[in-house]
Image (tube, rainbow, N blue to C red; front, side):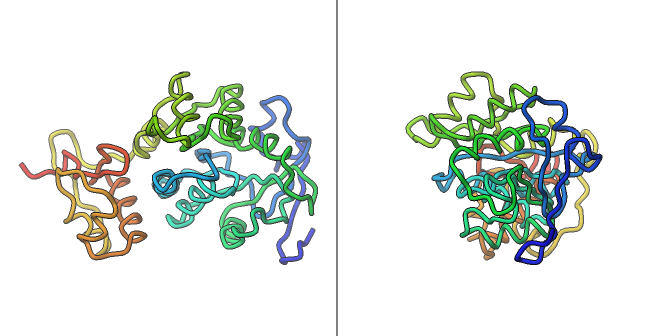
Length: 299
């Protein structure tokens, strides 16, 4: 079926080989799914990144960073394209040139929210937009809790970046636990309402998500540069990446500080940090602060 935007939308029943077979392992999954683009590659790792619509700036930066670093390492990013954390995770993955997939609470041919039409089009062209609801379906309140079971079902692990006490992201986390998925939560300040839900998850046993490197290590995807006791080999870096790397030392610095010192934009600095993290040249010593990796420090 061709949509009004000229995209091809397909429908697959759960008995079709193209249907994501991982979903057939779980109860209460849809009998079929509509998709524009493609489904996630079952042979590659997938991580869902979800969180509050009305998130903090810290939450936005964290979601973008996790989405970017994980996608740069080949991890497929799953989310719901909602305002706030979801959209930031998609955006981070797209900036890194990775693949990302949106599970919608509307028809796959309906961009919701409409303000995210640019991201929607990019996701369609590089990954896929997925929905169990019929074409043209509006985004109704009761649709979103349903779609959350698909988000967690498609992922190997779920990261909740920010969530209030009563949040759809907590529904996603609960589905993930039912599906025996690993659930991570980004620690937040106890005085922030947007961190109440995530901090509760931590109290219930969720794994603290303190850096994208940690997730890559848990997924078995962390790249090791150099051997034990040896200085790491310097990979090929762009001019911007070299400039940012020269600004990093043993003193923790934020992306904003590195942007100013390196005389590059925040977007360029964030992209460079993603590459340096994957290369093992830089470590995140605490959320949002970076230092030169010990193996790269001159004795």
